[in-house]
Length: 315
Image (tube, rainbow, N blue to C red; front, side, top):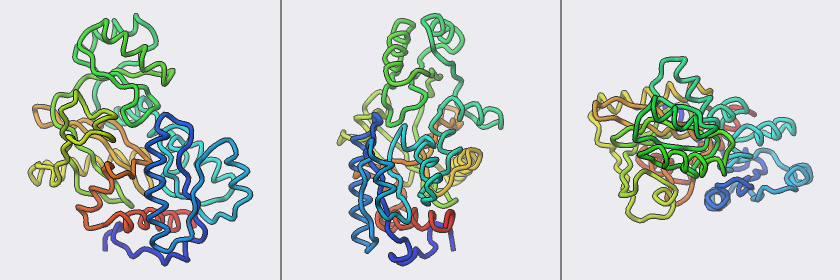
């Protein structure tokens, strides 16, 4: 029996579950939606779950409430970067998803790329931007088009595609509003795939299509014209190659429980790893629930599988 299809535990086995959502990151609004859906699903399954909109009083709430485990559905910094995981470990509260190191690595796009490159995994060429001179040097070395992104944000926040030096400088300045560390990558022209990882196994890949310049925040959460192709349209060999690459990418980061990887394919058919999200969205527009449905798991089964992994991994 596959790991993702192992029977979930009885609701009482989870104890009292705190669903941690909201927070202060730039992805707060998405996290509020994700958290509401996760909480509703857990309660409907009979789990003794309650929500905490993470704020300045979080430590007091965690200490005051009786909590047997936490379901982390915070997106971005403060929840997906290892800091929340560290706090919960200090309080001896088991939690869902990856541990401190894997969370911190995956949230840092630069460190993730450096690790993948050191192990020979394909990821687009890049540079770090800290000045106008860095922008001009990156343009000379990488050429155009390029994609600019904050190193520690998700949901495509602060990202921009650029075709020239002046646009690159403006995009760097815009991204720097969100993060002191800004990356620029070679633009990979071709289809984008997102691949979910659940309890050590890879779910069916999804091919993304959008009339937008790229799969940006609006395309992810607001637009009605984003296209999701599942099955993804690859032949069996290429789909297996994509799934194996995703597995390696997650394993090298030490991913645990669940995650979602974003991958591009170029005109020659080669795959290029972009990033891994360790607490992906769980809204009505989100991709992990879509991939889970293709694998035969409804939303409630998916949420319970993630929670079950926290028991098996952390007691």
